[in-house]
Length: 353
Image 1 (cartoon, rainbow, N blue to C red):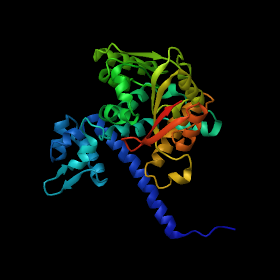
Image 2: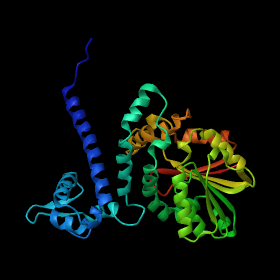
Image 3: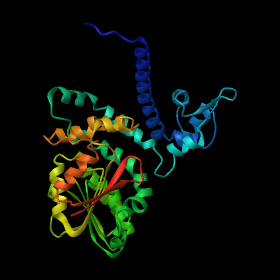
């Protein structure tokens, strides 16, 4: 028997869908503004499309259409009398500047992952996934851009203080490893702040490791080094006093093996500092979380599929607190403290054996 259709619900959901598609297009527009410097140009003050284009050194016709999209999308204000566009200071704060709340670079993630939709669709049909190599080298730069300002602002003052006494030990001098280190910016920030400690960053991406090594050289660091390595094989001797993982565990092919290896490689009084996505392992508890669709979507488009491509666990971005606690316990971490990170997307797990 055919179900009766509620016309009002159809109209409401159709409007919701159009809102989703509009948001997707606006993400591309934000990415264009970030890549071309248009937000920085607009933040200097109101201007016509010609004036803003001149500030940015760009073609006016493209800038005018771009401004049309972002004005009707609520990002810019427009004065029809003067034909001037203005970027409100509160909006400019979120789209410009060298600070952790400049979110413009996150738009690159949407644009980058969109290029791989057809490959992920094929995995839906045939199983497997899209290997990490398919996303690189662009993914390396996308991740670096999305996290660099946040770590500059929060790593030393926000993440590390979550573990009581850790900063004092770092000042005295300890051995530290960062697993899944990407371009190694966190390693280099810590090495600069704590010159008496020694740091090593491990990652499977050669291009990312090369960037980390180059930055360490530019910063004049003698206590930071980087190595291309599968983090299930990090050395267990000599022991590390601190191992960190910044949004890296949920991407692993074999996250359980990685956590066991971390436990084995830690000194008896060592600390594992794991920063990972703030969410529940239960879908129903994530309903109403405004960023949950974004997180599940990134999981489908990258985090889960790169693991499944290698017959991995496919843990996914939204593995959640309950699964994280269970897996940490299974890896012999008997003392796990969890709290909110200073950024809205993550939780901090302070783990000891």
